[in-house]
Every structure is written in structure tokens, then in C-alpha cells.
Image (tube, rainbow over all chains, first blue to last red; front, side, top):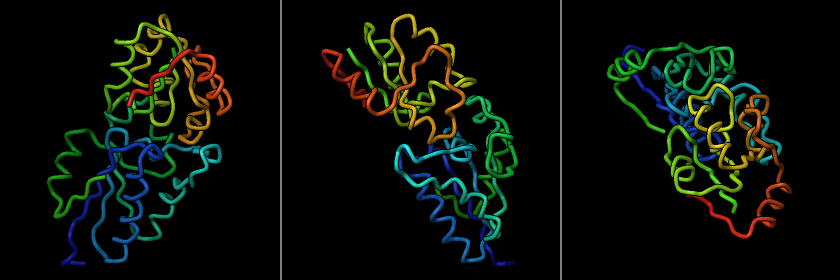
Length: 121
Length: 98
């Protein structure tokens, strides 16, 4: 793992309205096969991706939110949520399908700066 | 007139443009715009004040898909797809704010 690079996936879009959230998740799962140090960051509307209780039958789109719970099986365990974004949307940590670490915007910026590769969705 | 919004209120100015420009009528929130109809969202007050000018509707299948079906702001009327069709037919014209 010593030569592993730090990868961060930055998620800023709500699910379903655009394809970004799902595409990000697909790439995260692919990257998990390469034994890198992977972090997922949820900023702005990206925090909505993790909302519990998504029921997509009515819009006939696959509900991919359970996949976030499977990430730990792929050793993707670093999930970060921006506090300010979460609060602006009336959400709390209890609203999410997975355990996350809540970071302030400033902490998120610093974490982003540490990365070798940042992929934006 | 029916106004249809499909963009998130927190990352787009579409809802603002609509509220500020349109003189009133029916306002239907669909797709990522449904977040505007949720309790606790930072624009809740703005949405509530828009109710003085517009009759607000939200497309429930889109709200439920996003896990927020139980957080609908009071005064916003839920509609299903046939309600959507009804709104388009009962109004003399409509504008999708893209």
C-alpha cells in the first residue's frame, strides 16, 4: 500500500436528476479494484445522494443508494460529508444510509488539498 | 399559467428567476427542484413567501425517489403523473424553466 495514491471523488450533484451521482459510484467501484487510498467527499447537493429512504419505483430508475452501504466490502471506508451543505438542506447524520465523517468546509478543503488525484462529479 | 421547474434550488437560479419574473399562477416542482419543497431546507422561507403569489405543486414520485416524501412543506400540493397532466391541460399555457 506504500505506493498507493490518494484518490478523492468529489460528489456535488443530487441523485437521479442527472447521471453524475451514479457515474461517480461506478468509477469508485472500479477504482476499488486497484488498491488505492480512496475517499468520497459529498459537497453541496451531493449530500442528497446519501439520503435514507429513497423509493424510486415511481420514477422507474434503479435506486442505487444501497450501494453506498456495500462500499466497505471494497475497502472504501472514507466517506466525508460537508457540514454546511448538510445543514443547509435540513439534514443530519441520522439521515444517511451509511456512517460518514462530517467535516467543516475548511476541513474538507484541506483534505482535498492532500490528495494525489481528485475526480469531480 | 403553469410554471415548471426541474433544477435544484440550491445550485441553480432557476427557481429564483421564475419567482421573480412570473406574475403568479401554478408552480410545479419536478426532478431536482423537488428539494425546494422540503422542510428544513435553507430556502424554505422563500418558498413559503412564494405561496402568496403561486399555487405550489410537487411531483411526488420525484420527491419519494429522493427519500423526502415525508418532509413536504405544508401548503405545497402533492401530485402524481396524472395530476401533472391535469395541470398542463387546465392551464392556458405553460413554461418549463430550463
